[in-house]
Image (cartoon, rainbow over all chains, first blue to last red; front, top):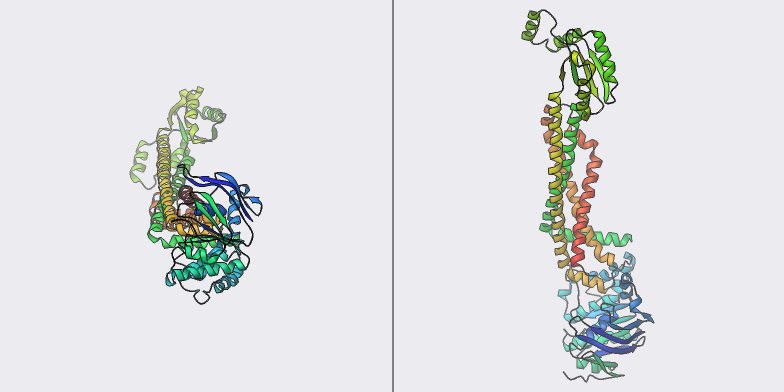
Length: 228
Length: 302
């Protein structure tokens, strides 16, 4: 489904964020990317949702090379991918319901669809009773659920989660992992970047390790074994 | 498409109303520049109108010596008419001139008395020559002066009116120059301040923009709110400027009517409403959109 072919990313100041990455992700897979900060995890994820372009090599999504997508078609491409971040990126002046609806509005969905889909997806992430609350009134774990609901609203093929548990306590982290596993079970590919050992070990899924921009391990049902 | 426009417009409206003071500053400066353009338009029109009225009344009077025969004057009339710049030549005999003079001064007993004391008709017979174009009078005077009838002519009356016209022309040109210069300066300031306001909005909505990008909002969906914000400022400013213009013209009309009876600025406002309105709206939108485009170019990365 997603394929990295000899991908390298060099930033302006000659910083090699990624070097010669070859990686294939199957549809429906749950992939965990581990590595210390600065290892290139975020850069790799950004390339999947076309926020960064590789300096060399090519990335394919469903056989289509991303470099062949016109700039103005990128927003359309991004609707295939839901994104979740450590800092949630919720709009504090909007309610939970509005936060999720915002994503649909932005893509030009009709009002009727928005009214039907948004409560449904909030129900799925377990926030059906908190739709009219504002992000600040929720716990951090619940805020991350809102972000996941927003990521899911387009019914994406892939969920990309960059350190989604980084700001959460261990208990909430496990809940978020469970939610992501549930989403994966329903057929959505999940790509999770994390350096939370407990989460990685509990998931028991395919793990790839990055170190200084290089792919140094790739194990099915892997454990977290990067030195901090 | 319609959904995008209505949603982004709503957002623009929210953005504009949320920054109350900034919006106020933007609109005030924009009103000033639009109003200046409107005043320029109205005053150019007014002075041009006055100029036209004066020019229509304009003529060259050629006075003939007492001993000139009527036949000579008639020949001269035909001769003057031959000039391409001349539109009309009217003959005023000595008797007719006296009659007109008496009519014009009937209320002034002193003049009437002195006229009686003279005993005979002191006035010259004359030809009143009118031109197609007020710029051509000098040529016509030259044509008359170099004609064979020069010896019969006692005086050509032209000088004063020429000065008046030149002065009016000068005023029109000055108004236009100053007006255009001020208009350009204020327009630039208006663009600059709109630019700054949109820039602030872009900063304030950084997170919204980021989220929009992540959820796959189209580029136009991200940009349109800022374009619309500029347009909203332009439209509101145009409305305010129109209102101020109307009130000022209404206030000034009695004074101007006293000076120039043909002028009615309020009726001018209404009969030219669409044109003034169109210019104001068009310019308002251009200023707003321009300011917003520059801001987006520099501060909105997509």
